[in-house]
Each structure stands twice: as C-alpha cells, then as structure tokens.
Amino acid sequence: MFDAYTVNWLHLLARWAHILTGAAWIGTSFYFIFLNNSIRPPDNEQDAGPKIKGVVWMVHGGAFYRTTKYDGAPEKLPTTLHWFKWEAYLTWISGVAMLALIYWGQARAYMVDPAVADISTQVAVAIGVGSIVGGWLVYDMLIRTLWTRPKLVSAIGVGLLTALAYGLTHTLSARAAYIHVGAVIGTIMAANVLFVIIPNQRVMVDAMLAGNTPDTSKGAAGALRSLHNNYLTLPVLFIMVSNHFPFTYGATEGWAVLIGLTVIGAVARHWFNLHEQGTHNQWLLPVAALGLISLAFALKPADRLPVAPSEAAVSAPPWAEVNAILQKRCISCHSATPTQAGFPVAPLGMMMDTEAQIAAKSVSIHERTVLTKTMPLGNITQMTDEERATIDAWFIAGAAVGASGI
Image (cartoon, rainbow, N blue to C red; front, side):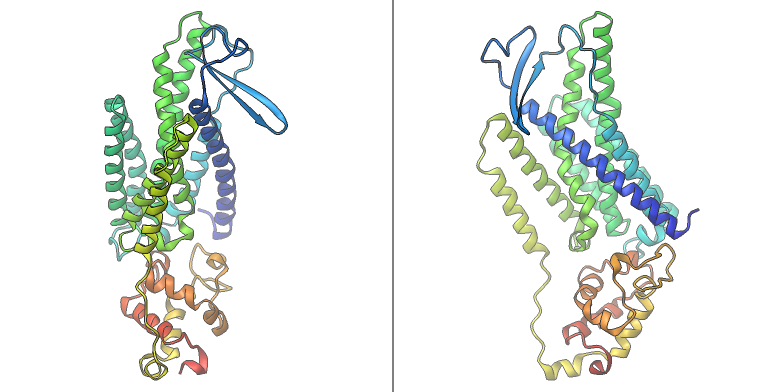
C-alpha cells in the first residue's frame, strides 16, 4: 500500500509518538503508585478533615506540595478534575501502528522464519493479532474470577505468560515473538485503563454529581488493575528495546530469557513499592541482581580457543567462498543501495559493499549469523547451516578478506 520510504517515515512518526506518550503514561503510573504507597495518616490539624484517609508532603523544583487522599471520595467535587487516560490510549494506538507498519505489513521479513515454523504470512499475522486479543480476554477473565487471591493470580499469570512466550517463539521469528509478547502486555495495560479504571472512576463521579454515595468497590477494582500495570511496566520497557539485543531473543531458549527478565523486572519493581510504603526489604534487589548475573552467564557463548596460524591456514575457507555467501544472503539489505523490498536504507546503517566494510563489521556479522542466528532477518534469504558454519570458520581463522583471505 505504501512504498518503503513512506513506511519508514510513518514508522518514525509512530515511534516518536510511542516514546512520548509512553514516557508520559509510565511517569503518571509510577507517580500515582508512589502516592498510594507514600500516603500516611494526618498527624496535624492542617492535614486532617472529613473523609481524609491520608496525606503526602513533597518538595520539588523549589516548591512544597501537599497531596490528600480521600477515603472513597470528597464531600464535594472541585470545578476542575484532571483525568489521566489519553497517555495510555495513545501509547497503545502508536504501538499498534508500528506493529501494523513493520511486522504485519512486512510479515515475510519480520514475522516468518521457516527454520522455526513453515507458515504463511497470513497465518503469522493472524497468530499475532489473535495472541493480543486472546491475551486480554484471558487476563480479564482471570482477574474477574480470582481478584481476591492476588498470589494465586500472580502464579497463574506467570505460567500463562510463559506458555505464551514459548508458543510464540516456536511459531514466529524470535524478534516478532518478543514484540508480540510485549504487545499482549501493553494491550492488557491499556485495556485496564479503557475498560476498568476509567469507567469505574466515571461511575463514582457520576454518582457524586447526582448527589448519591459513590460505590467505593469500583475504585478498589480500578486500583487493583493500576497496580498490575505498575508491575508490568518494566517488562514492557525491556521488550521495547529488545530488538537492539539479539543475544536475548536469539538465544536457544529465548522464551525462558524473556520470562526470566520479566520476573526480575517485577521483583525490582516490588522492592520500590515496598520501599515507598516504608518497608525496607534487603533481599529483593540483591536477588534481582543475582538473577541478571546468572542470565548473563547462561547466555554467554561458548568460549573458543585461539587457532594456531598453521591450523588457521588449513581450516580457513577461501575468502571468495565467504564473500559469495555474504553477497548472496546479506548484501540485498546491507548495502548503500538495498534491493530487498521494505529496506530503503541499510538496517542500522551497516553496509557490506566493500571488503573494508566487511572486515570492520566481522564481529557483528559473526554474532548475528552464527552465534544468535538472528540474521538474515527472518532468514528471508534462506542462509543455510552450512553457510553459517563457513562464516564461523572464517571468523575463527581471523576474518581475513581480499588477497589475505585466499
């Protein structure tokens, strides 16, 4: 429908919108969770009053602020009441716009990997859309059924997220699987705002405007969903930048890496929540740090012993053979003038038109084609395992190019 240049500009605009609105949403989410955690009972007459549950005093930017939390609702609403909803809606809309432009609109390059599952682009897109819609429906049913048992909900939630990550990484390309898990989580967060938090708050406001006593259970249900959003924020942030770290989604068990980082993020967020409540837990952050260190060691590629020069001379494949593979499998995208549809410029500015460019990027070439096998993207040019082995041998032998690689 659009040419590659237009798609890239639309992608840029959508990404900027996603970053700006996402930052605003995360900021307000963290701030209001901080308020809920930091509210303390009034300790003087100035802070006390009818239906006041607690207050929190803050200092910022050379000024003092006092925020009051009411037990249910105040006796009278102010003239101006600020709502926080468009940050969530626009973050989701811009995120889905990027999904549609890049992944669903170019599913052959970004979503389908024949080495993972030999499916059509239509099936891949259907799986992506279905997982997003189904993820929200399952989550909503789970919360409505077991909302009074938060620990059980958390355990089941982690189990379902693990099943989702496992299923998607065994159906879609690794990168697309990660992005769609993030889309599922982001949809849950935005839908919590759209279908529960804001409607429940509006019911309470409408009751007050009608002179009735508001149903405080509506506020409690909204607060629960807001808390869930708080714990899901860090995992979503990681997934947003995961495409820059192929050693995560490109790992042999990439789904387990994703779940591990998700749990670590939730544990770290829990420490902050406890700290704001005045509970000083000394174990959570060390446990999260240990988890990250353990993942780092688990993902470390197997060490390679240096190859002796004489052995390298015998085992190194001819440069002409290596160059032929790169020209056949990589140059269609990684060139000053790409020929692959959907790529008006070389991804990440990485070009392989000359021997000097290839030599300068030999480490990256080896990492992406051999260690993580995340390139070619979606294996769109069908690089074989034998060809990857040839690149591996070339790199081990010193990654010589031109006459020195003969």
